[in-house]
Image (tube, rainbow, N blue to C red):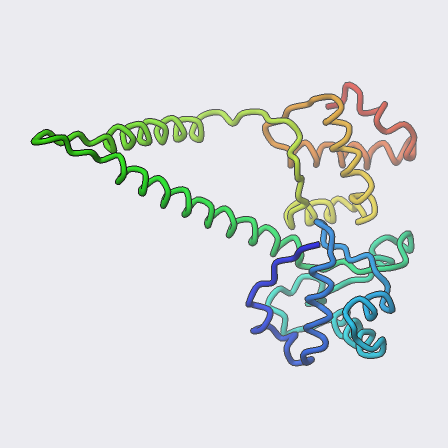
Length: 245
């Protein structure tokens, strides 16, 4: 597995706990799945990173504790939360890294910025190579590339300013802080989101559905889950969704 570590960690209040706690936290980030879940026990983690169990357990206790000095005060500044607490005991091992998705979005944006910068560099290099001088006549092929690029930019602007196109299910659907806050306000538990989000995605992949706003579609699904659970429990949810979306 892979997890990007930002330099911010060395300026955060976690550093007051010492290197072992930071090392354990970094290990959890690296071992986490795309949702920020590190499904591993304390003994297994200690064995994996080559640290004594008592040091690992003490570090985990510190990471689970509230921290008023944290720069991201969600969950009272806790760095990790046991999955058993989030799932009502359904999972009895592992932790959820509280700000994992926040930093993942930041990582993705940084990656996109670097990729765009590299594309621009290559484009400019190609333009210079296309500038050809024949005798006394200057033939600037780069101008054609520039005009084409401007035309494409205008078309892109029109698309952005126009109606948003409906798309199929995104390959990676992220539960943003806004969506999680909305779900909490609706009284939906973390366990419900964990269970229903894959159902939502699988259902629409199978149907070949397209939406202009997948966040809004997800909210609509969760509203229906909330309503139907009052009357019909969890029975045949996919069947109940027929005709509803």
